Length: 631
Image (cartoon, rainbow, N blue to C red; front, side, top):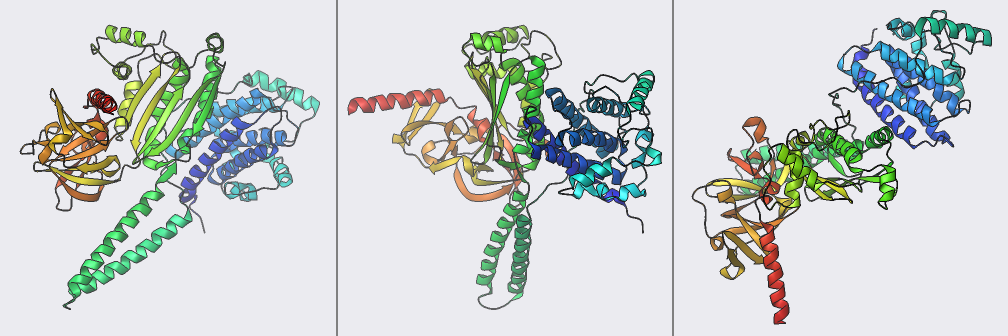
């Protein structure tokens, strides 16, 4: 009976991706002077698993390169190969190439055999101290022909199923790896060590035919788009909870069917009880399903130590990366969309923010700059910050560049207004164009990508002391707990996590300054924003004393949102307005209510931009001074 191995491809791709990520993290942590033996064993096992799975599915390009990498790791873990920084770099570059090959197989694109050959030659030259390397048929898949036939007996060896293994016997693995068949002679992948004469002859012949490159790692072309993983690993306890909730839902459904057809006197009361139970079941089911999509943000953060290390070396800078809050959970859909913006911001911090070591020391700083990646949950949002202790943003340069580009600059603009100029398309203060930055493409895309998922980005910076980019995104893109409110004949949903309290004020709590309305409550003045005016709604309540003021706390400001009345709390499913209609200022999305009407979900962060909180702060300070004098 033949087995369709293609059905297992996705499992192999996902597991291999995890193995490569684990290998990269372990390689980054290794001290070449005294490498941890368990780390080396773990890296070896990961490479061994990828090689075995490649053999099963006939992924010869992946398997051939991984096999040579495995040989180098095997020598290192047995003390036969001294590790150096260059060798660690070589192994890291090999993981890059393996990721690229894995993406090719996943997307069905042709693999770059030349790059694979170069990668193998570079590894073999590292293994052979005298520079000898094996002959490889350039540009041909026949190079790794021992993987091509799934029916070969070698593939049915236990090694062939390595991607499912947890542990392998070191002795057996080493012996198996050095076995060779007559068909493999000449490719040097399984051959035993040649004699000195054979080594010299092989080396001479290879140089004439191939002109092998130096041990510098091959260049791996970075793909413009990555293949998004379609699977997610879920703890079995979450699955068990889901099964139990489905069981309760089925019981509730049966009870409702019975009561719906019953003519008993108490059937209406029991029907209401059943509906309450159904609501509880549905809510718990929603929460259980959403929890299955939640992943720690370390899935994003863990890729940055490598990026920081490589870019710092390239720019001859010293950079330490600190990660805080990596266990903070966020929706998987958001994780995929945060990778590119965070990558650009981290690169900017290294390139534009962190100074060269000698400059830092002259300024009284440590030679090594620090970049901190942090994440924390605040209400219904996740706040991610990328901060550094570098040079900070240069206000004069930004204003000068803005003037050159014809950008309008507020006459009495705040620091925040000036920092926001860097989000203009094509804006860059870089002195020269490099492969890292200076083309004026990026920050506008960063903000657009973040706003597309309902997020916001803010900048704080002090020249000479560093900058902080703060990104606030919703915890999930699917469901929000909200307070339904009415303004005129329109219904809006205000996210519950942004609400402090709701009050109907009296005249003694109100004050007017020009066109600004202020509310005194909780020992401070709150600017009042009329939702009907902001959303251009007719027939709404105009007097604050006849309305309801909802005290709102956004990530940066507090204000009072004026509405006609409260309709009650409700959990709503978020639908994108941009996808179905167009972007509406002040709206985070929309939802369909129980009566079939559409309600706008209010974006409190966007509304906060309309608030002049300086007036409120001034009034609060004046009030406190007056109270102090009165005492």
